[in-house]
Image (tube, rainbow over all chains, first blue to last red):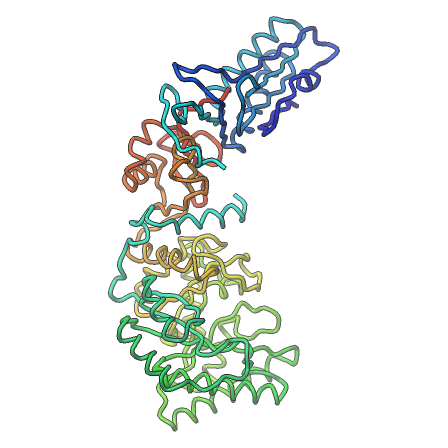
Length: 147
Length: 398
């Protein structure tokens, strides 16, 4: 059973890797998405993530289970919401598989699909203002709107 | 969808000026009197003023504290203020509800006497205020036998009607259908019919039908066939000509539960289609309808608006809730928004309605994807009563 969760605190990458480790698996691949200082010319102070939590967890589970079925791997995914400071992980995908090829492929599938289908949004809090990032658009926001 | 999310979802109707068109839809068709039971904390005339403010053309009220036996007689100035308020507000129909303590079928003689005296007070106050009907429950037999209880009730009603008739009263008594909780009388139409017959023909004795109570008592209203069956049973045992007031309340409890718990219109076990049928039924178009739904201060305006929408459209509506994400949250907030849509509406129609109602939502359909009950839905997907629709702008997780 894939372990997926939307969390509000720091993501423990090692714990996720331990969750997927199996003695019949020869490779563990972990993707860590972390927040960047610069985004499309803006200087970012920190990020805030918001999610449609019940649907996001449902979609994460679906992605993880599809990967497990296709590549015979074990998958754990956590995505963080709320404030995430620069250099901290916003998402971790941990995959263990019999061989490295499956681990890499499954991990890439998970993070790519997550970005397309899991209802999570980020706001970049920058020196010149705060922006919702929606596809190619950066839409100015009022920081007070989120609790 | 849980009950909890349903009830929180209804609050956003209250947000000022977000969807003014929803609450303004449908001025009363001239023949249809719609209103609410208004709290009388600010005095009797304030019931009418407050009722007018939320769009009532009919108002029900307590003329005294419903949980106390002793009630000081009305002051002349209060009576004058009430008549003046009625003239000023043009509230066309008023009805009084009696005290909860009154049991006109009580087996203990002292309680029966006290009840009769208190009910005479109800009639006196209503008469002075020019209120044509006092609604009362038929009392309870308290395990002392239904038959003798009905006989006591019949005797009591006959005496009250006769003595007030001699004094030239115009105010009449409307017996309310009950849910059949405990030993309460009057949940079967046959019982009401028996009492009407026992008292004998009197134009000052009528009946009040409460949708929540009859549903809890086992009379279904949800689909057309059952609604017709219930109305036919009412007509056969009571007579539609005896129907003077309707209480429109949804029910928190299921059909036949015999438990009386009122719910907001369209959010309970009865559901929107039954209320749409009720408020557009030509056989009932002259019968005033009042709501007695919970949270009067915040929700009466919403529930009344729902009934008006159903009454004016004649179209069946359904309630769905909408949740916004991404930058829309900055101005739409996190609380779900309750929206009434025509039955059979699809996602695209909801998107169009949202765009039309708030200029900040312009372009939403092109910009966003939609989910219905946490599953992606395309624009042609049909919506169902109670669905939760999420407006999902391009995502940026990862």
